[in-house]
Image 1 (cartoon, rainbow, N blue to C red):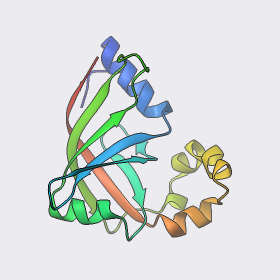
Image 2: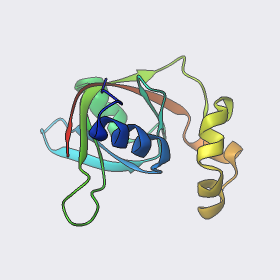
Image 3: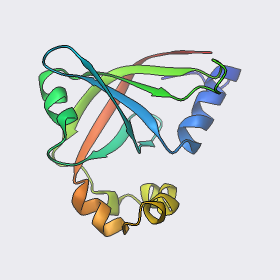
Image 4: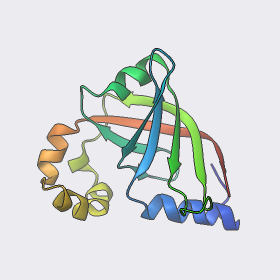
Length: 138
């Protein structure tokens, strides 16, 4: 997806591994963008995001799989990372409990929001896969 031998590509790879939250934007039926902060796991090719079954973003994806993802800037307009891609609901996807890397990444997050990994998995039971198609930033 991006060249990690460049300064920008290396920074993007590091941020996708370390960042806890990414903004996930889907589009509602009335064409209103709907940005939502989500937890995610990047495997080098796709993003894995878990959702509650009743979430609006799932209906949005079913209607229009085109999405955007972006990381927060450095607060001064720098360190911008924006990705476009195609999302799909992974009906046979893994649960958050089945992905060791997800549990490790969000262990402190589970504690911070006062939920066990098992309870999170029950509530956020729908897996979404996003395949990025374009990257921009600086």
